[in-house]
Structure formats: structure tokens, C-alpha cells
Image: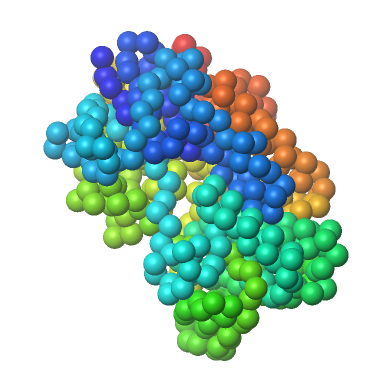
Length: 435
């Protein structure tokens, strides 16, 4: 019997645990370790932050649903990974043994790299459920006492979509309250241009998002480095294409929300040889560590080079379907190693399908693969996308409760559009047909 431990029960870790257990079967043990006892659907955090969702609508207790699939669960925070003994050490000093480890921890939020940044200081965040709830309190203060707003992404950020979602959703909230005329909004981003998204743009994302910002009277500053934040004032350097300071801004704000840079969590980053200098796990094309053959990783915790060199550093986002493709590859590779006693051979396609809410409309983009050059690069906007995001929230929560990471109807519907999770997915490589 092999024991596979998955760290992190997010939008990557939960599907990973379900797929690994399904593929390996009852003869092997799968244990999920997570510091919270609830699953949180992070893509809905912008709605939490403006009061369009309550936390209970996007969370559920993990253990019961994992138990239905014979997956064990331990609620604990991992503080150390001992790769020599194949053990995890928790904050309570419990020891968890593993034969194979799957890291799906998500990121550490590196607010400390910008003076005055973060909920502990002067800017809000929607990166965690707790931060989104705290952000809602600040939004209520804004509604009671209107004033300038700054939304965007700090230098080094690698997740830009939620910042765009939040600024458009907040604009809708302010218009509905009849106070938008009292709230000037700036969108401040490290991207070299609006709609870059850390991906070098997708389809017509640049012109479409610029148009949306203009129509909503939202001004923007790109190539922005936030030098420091004080109470009510943000100090920003706007760089030119050569990386030199072009303009300096000191913008007042009543409310601000900026996405921070990400780094690897301490327990993972402290393992010598496992990560890059920022603490992201280095993996090969099969999502396996080149140094530790029994450690796999997928999701935001994985090291991926930036799409291109930009005047202000921007990271590569790890989007939902891309993460799911990583986890599917990990499950299949564990099957190859444990069941077939053969080397890993499955590779995730890293295709990206993203749905973004924009308050009263929305946008969808498809990038195949996510990293350019692409076979498909498509970006569309419409009210239908707003409802698609709502529908996807319900659908994904249901998948995580029922334990089906990739229902057959989803798999074959996407396959008809040429979208698959694994490269060269054929009869020899499609384990689901063997089960």
C-alpha cells in the first residue's frame, strides 16, 4: 500500500485528492492535509468583498465529502517537510508519514515587500476569504463616506484577473448606491499595458479592457511600482519602457485593494533544492520535482517563468483549468509509478479557460496553451459571461462536494472543442477508460 499525502485543499488540491484516489483505488491510502476544515471557492472572493456573497455560500466542510470517497483528512498547518524521512511536521508537532507527496498549498502573500501594504496596514486584499470579509468592512466605510479609490496589482504580482473583476464590480456597487460621481477610481498595475494579464495579452484583451475602463471613467497607470503606502496616500513610480521613472504620483485614497506579489509558503520554501529563490516548487514536465522523485506539485505553488520581460516584474498566473490539468497529470503519473511500475509520462496541456465577472457584464478567454505561442487565443465579453461565472461557481462547488473532478460530460464537451487536460490524450494514456 502506498500512502499519498496532498497538502492544500483548494481548487487544485481537492481535485487532486479525488483523482488520485479514483485512479489508485482502494488498495492505496490518500490523505488530505489542510490548515482549515473548510473548502473555500477563492474565485468568488470579489463578491464576498462587496457583500454579494456570504462566506457560507462558497464554503463547505471538507472531511465529510472526502470520507465519502474513502479519502482521509487532517486539519493541520504544516510547518516543515522532512524529505529525508518522508515526513511532514505540523504546528502541533504531529508527524505525518508519506510515500508520495503532492504539494498544492497555494501562495504566501508577500505584502511585506511593499511598505504600508496589506490589510494589517493600509490596503485591502481579496486573496483569502478572511481578507475579503475584512475588505467588505472597508467597502461599507466607503459607501458611508465616499472618496477616492485605488484598485490594481503591486509589482511582482502574478494574478491580475481578480483585480479587474474587483474594480468593475466595485464600480457597479457604487453606481447602484448613487455615489459613483463622488468616487474617482484609479487602476494601478504593474502590467506594461491594460489587459496584459501576465500572459502577454489574450486575443483582444488590451483594447476590450481599455474600452471598459474608459466607459466607466476609471483612469489607469501601467508599468507602476508602488514605492510605499501611507494612510490615505499611495506613492507610485510610473516607469517607461526602459525601466526608468517616467512620472511620480502621490494618489489619495479612501479605499484601496491591490493584489500582492506571491511567494512560496515557508514550509515548502525552506526545503533545500525543492524551490526557486521565491519559494515556488521547481517541477519537470510531469509535475515532479527533479530532486525529490516522490514529490509532485501543481497550482499556484509551482515555479513558472514570466511570459516575457516587462519594465516592472509581472508573474505568470496559474488559472483554474490550467491547475486542473496539472493535477490530472499528477494523478496519472502516480498511477504509472505505483500501479504500472513505469516512469511518469503524462503532461498537462496547461490550457486556460477563464471566466471573469464585471459587475453587470463579464468576459471569457480561452488560451491554448496558456503560455504563448498559442494554438487558440480568444477573448469575448457579454452579459452571458456574468451569468456563466455565477453558474460556474455553483458547478465547481457541486463537483467538489460530489468528488467528481472531471465528469464525463464535461470531459467530452470540452474535447469536442479541442480542450483536454493531458497532452496526446489517447487510449493508451487515458486511464479513465481502463477503470
